[in-house]
Amino acid sequence: MIDRIALSYSGLRAFQNCPRAYLYRYLDRIEPMTDKPRALRAGSAFHAALEKHLIGDTDGARAALVAEFAKANLGDDRVLENRAKTLAMFDAYVERYPSDPFTVERVEAEFCAPIVNPDTNAESRTFDMGGKVDGVVLYQGELWLLEHKTTSLIDVAYIEKLWTDFQIHAYAHFLDMAFGVHTVGVIYNIAQTCMLKKKVEESEADFDTRYAELCAKNKSGKSSATRNLGETWDEYAARVIAWYAERSDPDTGAFQRVFHRFRPAKVAEVAGTVWDLTQALLEARRAQRYIRNPSQCYVYNRAYDYEPLCRSCDDPLIRANCYRDRPVLNEELSGNPSDTPDEPAF
Image (cartoon, rainbow, N blue to C red; front, side):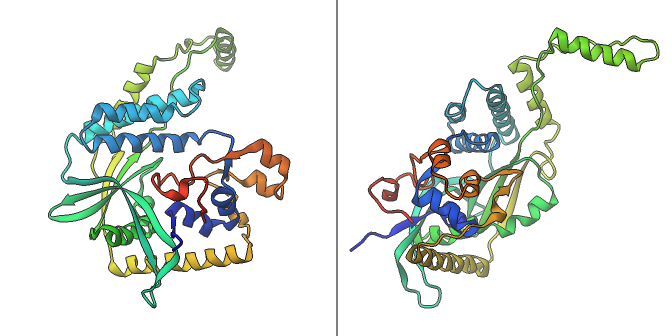
């Protein structure tokens, strides 16, 4: 019997957004020769810290956060600034939530369950669904999923669109199938990233230029401006923590927890969509046709990872000089055999 292939949510989302990008990432197994965008690195690091913090290992949480940034270029002052800011964000989070109203049942729980045809209840012969949930917690006698999110802005629009979260509804369905863990909803644990920049020392030449410009604008021909002397990393961290302290309101502040109770019909709809996506994936594999979706080339105000390769129509020089082999196929499925080089992955 041939083992079924475990799909991840990230893989399905990649295929849904752009089949050609799915081909590059999950079949050709290549990735850009660049570091993660700084916003993604901060989110990964904060997430790693919360994983430890939830089990009471706060010291290990800070170490995990630092270790995540160690994967980046620590010679880049922007990375160092982001690390200091994310550490300060974690410290502010611990201060904001000295205790939790729920009991942690599972942390970073991996699952793998069959994908079922919603019309016949027959299991897919090719695919399973795998993933990892941030946490399962017991709150007021009911089990809830816990989902960590970082964002640059928490507003009404952000909160209102949470119900559309495909991933969390799929995870609720397949976690139940894998472990018989019935969750009634999800607690979104949301952290807003601080946009403050570290003050850097102004050079004498830059100050002289700025001073002259200010004097020229003043009728007296003088200015009271002084040279910016910058700030230390500790001073910067203290400023970030103060920024969070000013935004401590539980309903409008920088840290919020939003409770969303699942509708069974929505969970069932998402499970059916997963099945439909696997059928489209099988057809693309059979025909060896992975179409491009140009609307996905520029999202989140930046070019997508595979935009240079796609724009060049798969120029082998672009591929050789801008991309490398991916060391891990599915970061969400760290223990999955599909991550090994000898296993097929679709």
